[in-house]
Length: 459
Image 1: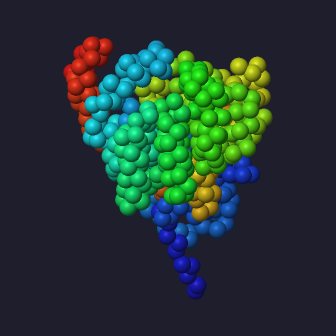
Image 2: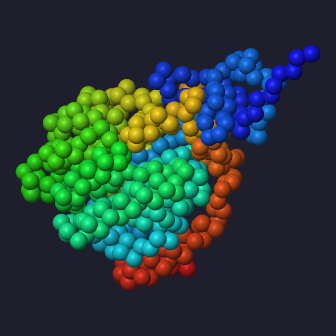
């Protein structure tokens, strides 16, 4: 008698609809995924599974995903994680007033532990919505790193560099960025660094050039806010007599490793400059609408074949971190603005939220699609709900009908972080309590009258 050797795996997910988002856009109406040592070992149809694996496997975790859809985890290509603590503090204001009168004064009192707690809160929210990776531009990033690594969330982290022309501040920001790179390289298992100058109107030419040099030297991606508001556009135009995009191009800052956030106020030649240099864009429709900044011209990006990803921005200007809501808004707003229901199909908006995000952040070789030997970052969506039934078109369900509560299980790097809506790596209630205490202390320290009324409901 011949005995077959048993194959050992970590996780097997069976009987699901599998949206791969690979180059061929392969879809399995009834499929499987096998995970071991953080990677996807195999995937395909259940017919293939029965033929290759029946009675030959042993695994630590088996999930029967009947009436579920498996998708690559969403990739949030632009955010400010710890700003979850400021959710709802300063609503219905234009960006300049929002920053100068509210956000920057309270951020002046922000400590490392505040960012640690705010980041945990952000990670919980994103995991609940099927997001498995996100890019952060903020402060106290070593504490952000600590929070994400503890939970098991994949972050792309950059210290937000801004100097307003101050030489002393410039050296300090460059030093912080270099320290962060070293810390991530030494300690991180999941997170990676990104170089993050804030914006053309808050950064000197010198700090922008230093940021580009760091990116080149360390072979790291870059991110920057670009042409987010008309005010920024007008400031740069008045100072340098060029658009913000041309200003960066003149500095040779535009490049393939750059992802620019927002990019609303562009001229025709600006799109051509982005395309020529291979720049990627993080589209943040909710934040742009809420702050009254404007609406990105999707048609021009499409015509110039520029890679568009999706970001939520911070929870203080969105006011949530839901990629499902973001891709739904993106899908709908551009159909309306262009009076063309065909301009942005559901499958394309899902690309923006997955593989395009991985491409923008330089991670497409590891994440963004469900493929053999890629990292096992995925979300399982339960379609046995009234809002997702009948399941005629899985892409349509996600783009137009789903909500975060339909996500039941989230896996990052082959580790289940949330199963059946229950968190396995973090105590959610403890984080909520810590977040409440953190924001109370921050508001007290700020000593600004416009914050005082916010304390009543927290205490």
